[in-house]
Length: 471
Image (cartoon, rainbow, N blue to C red; front, side, top):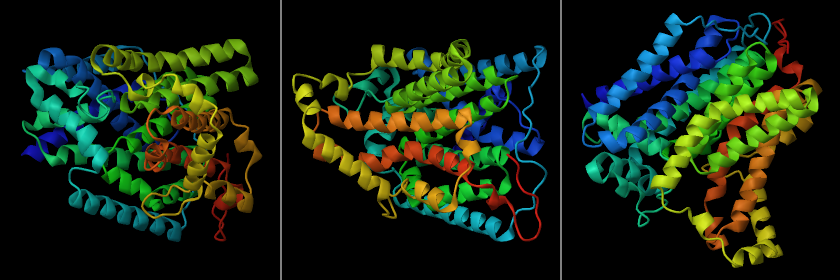
């Protein structure tokens, strides 16, 4: 019964997300494409909205959990009423993948086999480390327990005595919310949240590429993602890095869709901003992701369409991010203890900035992660440009404004992580020991998206005469 109630909690989040995305998401041409693209976006949006609702109700509802459900019911009624009684009409985006394409059997079997193995790996790892890895039980799941058990004293979640009490609450609030649905704590709560983002990332990447380039390319992108064992390992670890990567991917996909259709561009950009804001509600690094996407959107639009169009597009993106960022700011100002990175800046900061050995130590560690092929921690980004050098690439893809926005944002985020390591008040050796593999997971799904979009057209032609994908 406990598990059923938690699945009902996931279902309620999915319904809220579905209504949210339906209002804002541009619609591809085919009904199946609409469903598979909207499903992962709805799941991510729903978990974001319900975690915010859970947090905002905490001052009143901590002793009265039924108020959380009342808040969610109000959201469902409001969004459903808007869709039913407004004059809202869904804008169409013509599908980019041409006519129906018969997919190579070998490629389909490979994708489903590797996906099944990844899911089995995820399940087995979840069973052997039911509380997740160290970060999961020391930060995210511990915060969830404080929220759920705290009652009137729920603010103890943010005690400076706890490790990283300033971290945002999307994951802990989502887990604690499922426990409120179940009426008691269960290890299945954190497992369900981890499974949701693990599955949603795969489905979103495959569905987005299916819309933008076609089925063959979608299977290639999905294979690259599920073949990286680190993606499965860290998903089962129940930490926030895979969800952060999902939200960056979702924002990038919507920016790409916006660049394909000027009619519904504003709704796609607003929704992209919303997902970028949810990245900031998931991890502190999400602020950098959100800022990078907004900045590159401004610069790319300015260079292509002029200042007026650039400002308009960026304001639309900011309008979607603003409600979430306001919640994050309230959390940071009212509840969270000081951030260790910001609070640790002192006279030694300048010394770290002018120390060449620190630059080389960080650069060496990041470059090592780029080429690292360790099965458990590898996201080998260096293989992507190597593949493109061997296979070739489409100049047309590189000229796409959405492609340029995502590529620019990825570069800014990577540089930003470099300087975060440079400014850390903690010993640099310790700081560089574990984070790089997890931080690269923020970028990995979006890198795969760009990689597949850049692949040459020859991938879509088979000896059997299947039609070539048009772009």
